[in-house]
Image (tube, rainbow, N blue to C red; front, top):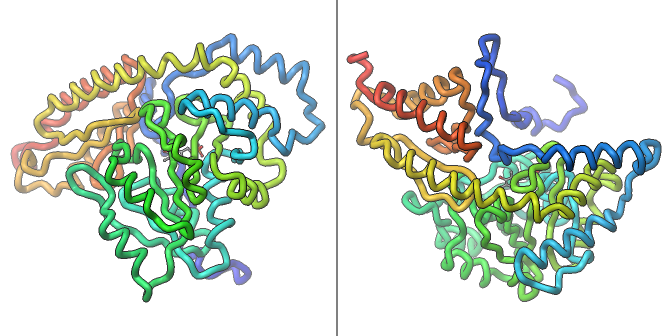
Length: 387
Ligand SMILES: *Cc1c(COP(=O)(O)O)cnc(C)c1O
């Protein structure tokens, strides 16, 4: 026991980064389909450009631009282009060391030190609750429809209206959601629109480039909305850690106050600017990933033991169909066996929320995912006594 630590930290665990260790007998080829990154690294010419900047223009001994001035201009331009708007300015933007940093900045700027709580609809991205917990901020959870994974807006509305409970100050939604891959429906968006001004609505559009559906055009009418985006997925820069928030200038200014002063290393700013400059070459591969998604979806749906949900993102959420399992099998233990066998074979995916989240990879990776599932599923779902 370290007596100087906050006592509530004893209940918290450190975020366990994926991929987890594969151990000594790691297979030669590992398909990393567990973190929804792009399967494509930056093209060699872009890496060369980045290396050129490091050699010729970047001063390693100087602090980076703490205001992110040039990058904000480039992001504003891309944001306008991406959502067919013309009003996004650098003053609407705050840039974080990954959107994870912005999630923390949002929590610091809203609930920290007060009594108020945040609301999330599970299953969803775990970082909202994890980060809130580290700051001592209570998390109120509601569920989702078991068939569509739409947010239980009735329960959410009741939680907000409950005057005996801690007031809810921030609502986090993901559009499309992770791990379930569904975009917000018109009914869910309608619910967000009518939330009162004193509640901040965070709309995480990490997978926007894959879904091509954004709430950015509505932001001017909603000073209590923040849209989060990231360079970690479609922009292939997960290693560089950069995400951004789009919001009313007052909200953006609050985020600027609470983030760390030099949060974005110079190389990261340069990398983000380069990928934006070269987006005409980088973004078309999203169409390839979307086509691969359709192919992988068809393959997954062909397995009678799997239940597959539609995807608006670059990953699938699947569960074992309980009616297809031999009656003597425990569903969770069976899912564990499937997950672990795939891992031993070199397919890393995510086990979460009673199912599996599978990233769309390269055509070869998706082929292997399909082949391995096809070989494994009948055996895994068959009666334990018959094995
Ligand atoms: C991957 C992901 C992010 C990205 O986080 P970064 O910190 O920018 O890498 C944000 N939100 C969701 C829902 C994600 O799945």
